[in-house]
Each structure stands twice: as C-alpha cells, then as structure tokens.
Image (spheres, rainbow, N blue to C red):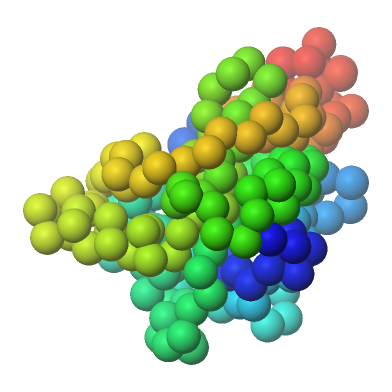
Length: 225
C-alpha cells in the first residue's frame, strides 16, 4: 500500500465538554499560530473528505464538513457514528479507511506520519482492520488511528442496536476490530485536558476564569496556569 496516496476519509472529534478547561472549546486553542482544529485538519492532509464532529465555534476550514452527535456530548462512540453518517451522506461511496483524530493534540502530525508508514509496510491487503497509535509509555491511543470504514460502521450499528452507542467509549467501539499497534514519536499524542497541559505544550487560549492563558502566563505562575 502506498501510504502517500491511499484513499481515506478523516473524522475529527471536537465535541467534548472541556470541563477541566472551564468549558473553553479545545478546537479553538492555539499552538504556533494555528488553532488546534486547523492543525488536526492539516494532519489529515490527503483525505478525500474531512468531517469535524462537535459544536460550531465560528471556524471551519474551507471544504470541511460539520456535524454533531445526538444527543450532544453523547460520547466518542456516538460522535464517530455521527461522523461516519455525515461522510456517507455527503458521498455514498466511502474509501476503505477512516482516520480518526481527537482535535486536542497539537503535534499529532508526527503520529499520523508514523501510522502512514505502518500502512505502507503492511502491503496492499493487510489482514487486520487498521492501525492504532501507541505512545512512548506503551499505551494505545485509540483517537489516533486509521480504521477500516466498514468495520467502524458495523461496530457502530451493533452498539446502536444494543442501546450502547450513546455514552459509549471509543474502546468499546473498537473492541471487535483487529488492530495493529504502531509506535509513534514521543509527544505526538500529548493532549490538552487542563491548563497545566496547555502550559506544558505551549498551547494558548482564553480562560473564562482568568483572562487569556498563554505559555508566558503559565511561567509567571510557576507553570500552574
């Protein structure tokens, strides 16, 4: 498989509550002059279609689809199912692979590149259902992976039929898939869950409790922004 030209869609999850960020949407946080949403879209470069699942915050890069899981905040399994449905509605013929990314990893391009290399090494007809990132601590990162579109759709339909889609975890959604783990560069799956995480990674954004949070502000507070 030529990982630089294979056919895939991309599904970017941007619908969490961001509770530990005071409700500030992660997709609008900035790193190196770009929002995390734009960085995620860039990491998905080459996708046939890209859908962002989450609330519309005023920024949608050109050509990007938008949708929302129902009910809102229904969890990542429901969000992935909603994204798959939106992609199928836009164009009924879907590519064999779907790249799933969370929008809160500023350096995820490196992880996606490693996954592409893993797909390239697999040849044209791998026996498994996709590749999933493994961070430097040995943990699988299920929100960074290329997955069989058909297998994702089948799993989502089974969860829905059993009443387990809403509030379902991504790990439950992927449980029936045979996935090849791929080690990715250190830091490429580091995500932003708290303002401490943001300060560590150099991510900035408006903190509703304390004005505009930035790396400099974190340093002023001893890194505890």
